[in-house]
Image (cartoon, protein in one colour):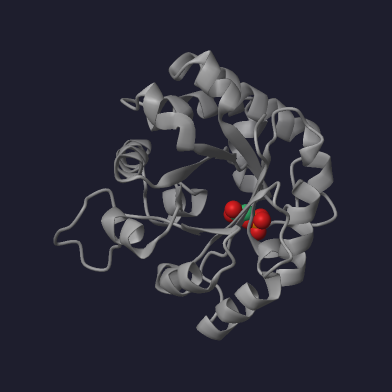
Length: 248
Ligand code: PGA
C-alpha cells in the first residue's frame, strides 16, 4: 500500500511572515493518512523545521551535488540535512530550463541526496512539442534511466517521482487524468526495468501541473498516481489543507 503524498512547491514565493502564518494556519488541520510536504525557499527551511506541526514534512527545492566547496551562492546537501530537512526536489523543469541542469547533473544530485539521507522528489516530464511529436515515452524512459544510473535498489525506498508535463506547469492547462495515469504507469514500468519490479511497485509517483482543489480527486482516482506536486495552489493554507484532505 503506497501512502499518498501532497507536496507543495512554493518556488520563489512568500515572505518570512507569510511562512510563519502558514505553519500556524495548518496546525492540527492536516490528515494523518497523507504525507503532507512543503518545499520552500532555502532561507525559510530552518524556520519551517522548527515551527511546523510534526505531520508537516519539509523539503528543499534544489541542492548542490557536492558536500562543501567553492560554489558561491549554492546550498549543500549536508547543510540541508543539518537543518532538519527531509525531502529535496531534484530536476524540476524550471531548474532544467533556466539553470541548465542536465540529466547527468540530476543523477549526481540524486546519488548524493540518498547518500546523505535526504529523500529526493525527482521530476520528469515532456515539453508540448515532444508530446505532439509522439515522443513522450521515449523522453520519459531516457530521463528515468539517466536519473537512476548507478543508484542501487537498497537506496530507493525513499525516492519519490513527480511526472510534470512542462506544458501543464503554471499554465492552468492540466493534463487530463487519463494522460497522467498513462505517463505514471509508463514510468512505473521503466522503474521496473531500471531498478526492480518490487521497487517499482513501491515507489510513489506524483502528478504535477496545474493541480488544484477542483481537479485533484480525478488524479487520485487513478491507479498509478500516488499524489500530487502542486505549485500555485499550494501557497494559501486553506487550499493546501483542502488539497491534502482530497489526497487521502
Ligand atoms: P503548478 O506548478 O501547480 O503551479 O502548475 C507545479 C510545479 O511546478 O511543481
